[in-house]
Length: 73
Length: 261
Image (cartoon, rainbow over all chains, first blue to last red):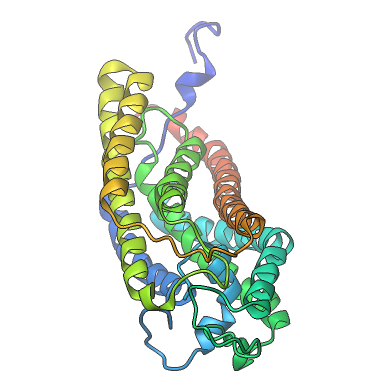
């Protein structure tokens, strides 16, 4: 901080951090899979396809499925 | 200082909180239209459905089985849906922000997050909403559910891929020609591709002729409001967590950074 005070503006202090892609991709791959499965159960299970027989999942999330905008029957 | 793991945790927190807000909107704004639509379905035999005029057997709902009461569906069932969907979406928003952070020009991390979530909302919800608007109960032909599900998710996937490409284009052009040209060109490219795709992909008109237009509008409005609340909530909570984290990181790291290398 030997420079004149008038020159040092706060914008120079803002460094924009980056997070390495190599570090992020495994998280994205794993969590992305988990998230897609979770969203599938809310949005589409026991609609066009089903992994669990019956209508329990469909009926339980019925209102949420409609209001979140998924095609529902 | 920030890590992918930390952004995932922040995203999950933001998604859970935003899910609660979305539940509030869906419960208060959305449920009246859902109930109105179910009343229409039970009151009159609809034209697209089977013509069994027995009001006791509205055939494509669970009402006939009464697996869960309407009271349960509209509270605990709805809450489950918003929390599971919201938390999953929040986590994805956190990780996508981790990738975008520091790579969108000089935008600060919380602004990058807001842009990422806004692009996600447009690409994954708003544009698909315009092409395949959601329908309340009693609307929708069960015979086409498989086809509609495929085209719906296909359209979302296409929209997200095109949006990611458009963001790359926008950041690339921003470096050479400035932010305005970059964002305008990226938006225009996305818009043109999606308009063509929307023209080419099949459309479904399955609203029964006698279905009240106001109920349909109210439902679609509520659906849009629910999703907007969810995405906006994620952007705000995630942004606040990031502002807090970068502030504490900056104050704790600053003394070390000031030392001569």
